[in-house]
Every structure is written in structure tokens, then in C-alpha cells.
Length: 266
Image (cartoon, helix red, strand yellow):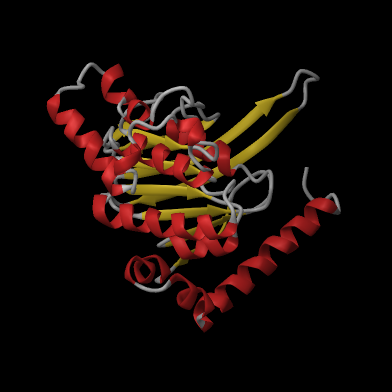
């Protein structure tokens, strides 16, 4: 039995002029507990729309999302979200940001405080708890965002371009942290990215969406995420199997983008 079931999801946005945009069409995916899935596709293919439906921020036009055998009807603590920009409270300290969820739920007891400290340690911010967020680098802010999500102990973590705003070196370091957290916590993760290399490296399963209306074009089962937990990222990414998959998917995405530019898709 899958933990997360995305069943025949379609999403249509009606426009004021009477027209509409069909963002997604008949998307179905099954995720098992502890699986890390990356989703890739050309601009405008509905990646973020799909993630927002799973998060409960949007209600689909058709279809449903089931988590642990119950229907997703809105936002809930069982699904945690990490955004491209951390969506942090910049005037608060690191510790105040990470403890915000437990405080809002009224469960910020001694055990919760210890858990916050543990999460700060896990993401490498043990000595930065009293620092205001605005004083941190982009990479450190994303570490805060990850810790804030994890401290709520969600069943599923949803990541929308979480590393997209980072420089190349920081991004690669953060990819390693995502894999470390995935293995240590056993969380189910869905990650949206525009980077083919990142999608290949982080996804046990990589889903390529076709241009609007977004639908599943191809699915890859990959070994690189498991390899990356202990192995050298640069070595893995330079390997022949990784390069072959990267070039195949790059060509696939480029072809889709060219079709879009030529007017092949609305």
C-alpha cells in the first residue's frame, strides 16, 4: 500500500475573459513511505501546481490526493513545505523560526525544545540559534527552513525549488544535506527542480512532465540518490551512467522547450 497516492489529478484555471488554462491533466503517481521523488519539466508544465495540490493549497478540478488512506482536503502538519525562498521570519532568531510550529500548536514543552536543538544540530546550525535570520547567508537560511519543516515531524516533505536561489557550490553542499536528512529521517520527499543534474542526483525516482497541460512524459528509477548518501557527488555526476541519463533528459527538455517557443503548446 502506497503512503501517498496522487490519483488522476487535473487542474484547470478559468480566466476572466472566459478562456481557461489546463495546467495538469490526469496525473497519477504512487509514493511509498521513505521515497524521494524529483519532478522535472519545462517552464509552465504544472510542477508547482501539482506540489500545491499535494500540499492542500489548491483543490484540483478533478482527481484526488490520498495520504495514509485519507483524502487531502487542505494544508496540514502531516505535509511540510520548503520553498525556494525560505519564507522565514527574518526579524526572528534561528531558534525562534524553527520553534514556531510547535509554539503555534501549543506543544512547545521541554521535549519540543530539545527536539528543536537536535534539528539545529542536524542541519549544522547548533551554534547559530540566537542569530537573527537576516544575518545568515542564503544557504544557511535554507538550512533553517529545512529544520523548521522537520521539527514538525511531517509524514511528507514537499520542496519547491528549495536550492534554486543558491550559488553552485552552496547548492551542491545542500544537495548532500538533503540526502543526509532523507536517509536519517526516513521521510517521504517530493522535490521540484528546474535542474536536470539536481533531479537526477536527488531522485530515487525522477518524473518528467510534458508541457501544458502537464502530464507524465517519462519516469526514471535511479541509483544516484542512494550512491550520494555516502559517495562523492562530483564523482557520481561525472560517471558514464549519470552523464548518459543527463544528456538524454536535457535533450528531452530542450525539445519540449523548442516546441513551446514554436507555439506547439498553449
